Length: 78
Image 1 (cartoon, rainbow, N blue to C red):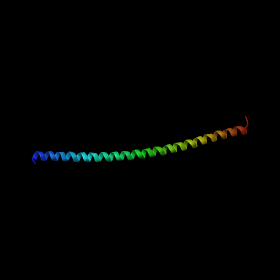
Image 2 (image 1 turned 135 degrees about the horizontal axis):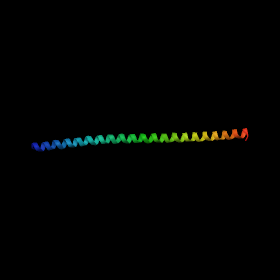
Image 3 (image 1 turned 30 degrees about the horizontal axis):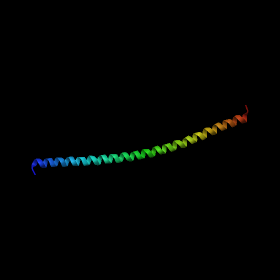
Image 4 (image 1 turned 135 degrees about the vertical axis):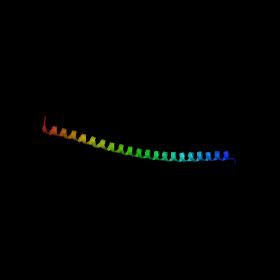
């Protein structure tokens, strides 16, 4: 094999190795991205559950306040 052919072979090998490294890096980044997305979705679901619970507490609280105000008005007269 001539020197030029050996040099071409080395260059092609370097290119192949660099492409493999780049592919491995992209796979790691993609896996990390998927993991972060899964965590984000889980956090959002938890936030929605908390928001719904808070909404029900507010609704019940407001209803009780209105009922108590009506009771006070009824007991104290016009």
